[in-house]
Length: 445
Image (cartoon, rainbow, N blue to C red):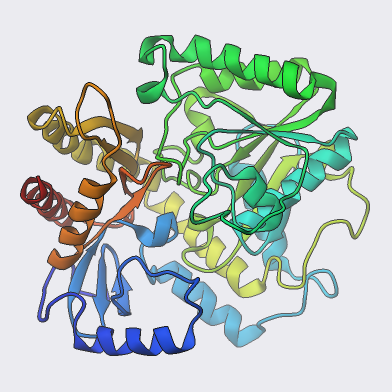
């Protein structure tokens, strides 16, 4: 790789050049744009980020599940360089190009189900979700969209309405788009009736919510993250998602799977829906699809996607040719290197270490969960009350950053660590990163 795959600290973190750049950031960039770790990156590859001070940091975040194939992956770089040299933009709605079509063909091939599909490309995950809602409403002639507690779907006005968490995503940004209804999420660790009762009780609560608050004939779609992301990497109990999908089919309600964070090999399958054989009517993708370039998609049943009038979908930059070239390189890498299998190997390495930490500290590690290379632990003040411990989470995160390990937190209560390493990371780096995480946790107690 272009970057040596080892951790090395030559200054404190952040170092003097990063601090100087951060002063410039504060003077030039809106304060509304936050920075989790003010370390300014100069180069990156595999599982390592190199900052402007020369520190080599272990990356357990992948830019929030974006650099799944690793930073500057060779096939991505080659495709982008060739495309930039050919042309950078024409707007697909004006004069189209093959790269857009090729990405849509790949989406049709890889997404769940063997039915005929159509796709449309956009710039971001939020844009994809918004367009999926447009398609669902147009096709069904209905207005209501059902989402779930703890959900995260984006930062546009409509996707803020779809998102559950107020701070920092929604606070004082309203009023929000209407006809959005929220159902309880099947959250085994925090389900009032206990994890064993969660599947049945959460499904019954979902059905009751739609029936009483929405009305089945008014619902255009149910929008669900198969594994919730920002909400805390919440994995619903086995069978629950399949029951929701079947119920939607019975009532003519479209199922939209938001696979923006879970998609493209992240969970050990091409998509998280594959794990239980769930076939959504519409699926939204972004993040890991294009190796770091901005690209998103909506893929769905042909009769649904084609029901929209010509000109109803699109955007100036949607499906930019350079981003499409990057996506084709990233997908080729996932296929050639069996990154679905690699995600399962990462799970096999991570989970015993995380569960061991939970066994040593059962009062502070409330839950270990996830799938593939999308894993999490939830921290609490004590096992009995399961009170979220955001303070401990923040302290561990700060210690990890200082030691050269890039970590991410999440969760409605700010008490979940999410682990999203690039699938190109080596086992030795993961083991060292987990050593650093365990040490940070032990020292923060």
